[in-house]
Length: 417
Ligand code: SAJ
Image 1 (cartoon, helix red, strand yellow):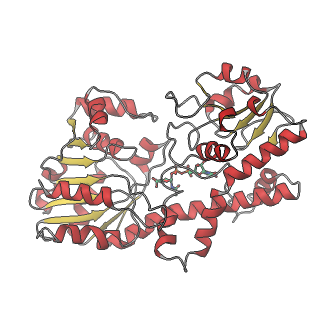
Image 2 (image 1 turned 90 degrees about the vertical axis):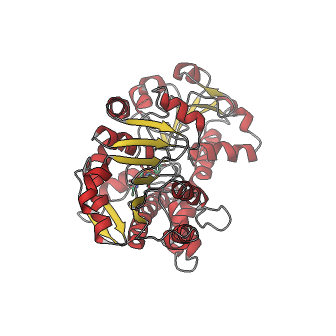
């Protein structure tokens, strides 16, 4: 196989044109591979075929142009290829908290309908440890296809952070799980075509666990910051000042409290461990619960502040930010949407005013599309997301009552978590 590696690198199919698959496909094409990007969403494929991007990300447009001028095209059916990269969603079952591998298994079956003998299937989607043994190997073997002979398997989980996707794709260290050193080396060479980060080679199950552990570590650390915010609120202390002082200790590095943990990764992946090991994952479970309680905590703060200011008119309270974090257009598992849901339960969703510069489509009631119009209609602003836009327009908030859940505001008298 080593001899054919240069050829292999030229013929790559990426399945799943989302936040991970698309940048990865573009990067490979920009650095010389012949790439086919595949997605079951026909509308998304047509968009890409017309040369239009489906989400915004710093440096993505330039990379798209570079890839288009090399060799990339987009289609909805899976073609013959020698390397497949699978980057499809891996949600968790809401009741059992265990992984729902259905998208992954479908993608694998689509590959197996057309694969060339000796191809490598690299799974980049984040999976719960053991998923490849439990779901992927049996799906392949069921078809009489021998792993290690007809196809090879690898797990090389993505580690990129939305907002810095392109830089992190080029620079982050990667973990490559494979059954043999030979396959690992081929996969390493593929990624080394564009990535300067270290590549750690290991077995597949270790790679699965390492990725979940990274996101779980961050979730637990954010939960600690959020729990501190609640304790400090109770004792009338400034949590940000305390974290700043504590972080001056050489071995302390506390993260920032906020309105909750969103996104499709950190708020999902720890559940895999809880679902598979309910009696062993007590800290992980508690951290999830703390982070999931933050939208409700924000609402309690809103009601307290409203009372403190003579019972504000609820229809004059505006929420700034719908995305799960700053300067991205991704709303998956966003704490802002959880706040809207919660207000529905309190029967006051129809009064909520909300605005986000990154969200052009109408996805909630009373959504604004312009900062000035939004501000003109509210007396209190709840900052849920610290987009650059609001940081650059702080002057416009001077006469408002402000609850800043992101500690991004430098105006006197602002309320914090
Ligand atoms: N958040 C806080 N306080 C903080 C940091 C984050 O409340 O101090 C919140 C954010 O506002 C957001 C959520 O946590 O709602 C998650 O945001 P994030 O920026 O921490 O992470 P993601 O979800 O955008 O990306 C993570 C990254 N994982 C780690 O940093 C360990 C990224 O490297 C992974 O590739 C990505 O998950 C993924 O796809 O798994």
